[in-house]
Image 1 (cartoon, helix red, strand yellow):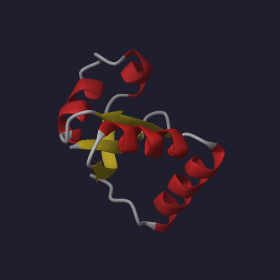
Image 2 (cartoon, rainbow, N blue to C red; image 1 turned 90 degrees about the vertical axis):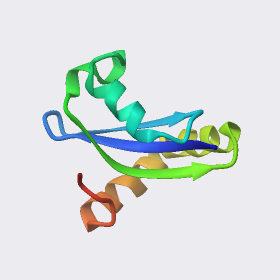
Image 3 (cartoon, helix red, strand yellow; image 1 turned 45 degrees about the vertical axis):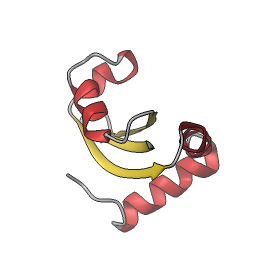
Amino acid sequence: MSCIYVIYSNSIGKFYIGSSREDNSQKRLNSHNSGKTKSTKFGRPWLLIFEEYYNNYSEARRRELFLKTGQGRKIIKERWQSGRMRQS
């Protein structure tokens, strides 16, 4: 099972969308917060605000790529502002 996740940084006010071949988004969050991920190193600490699970990685990757489009980012921003995404 694979997953996609959205994390948010209060310090820089940005979202990051990622995917994992594993079904453990908490493990990926720990990786982002430890500074091991170059693209998120400067926004620490990151909060896990959304996750979805898929049967295989290709489905998860397809969803991740959609969420990284303008339309996908708009959906994330609208859900965040309406309170439909949790804040850890």
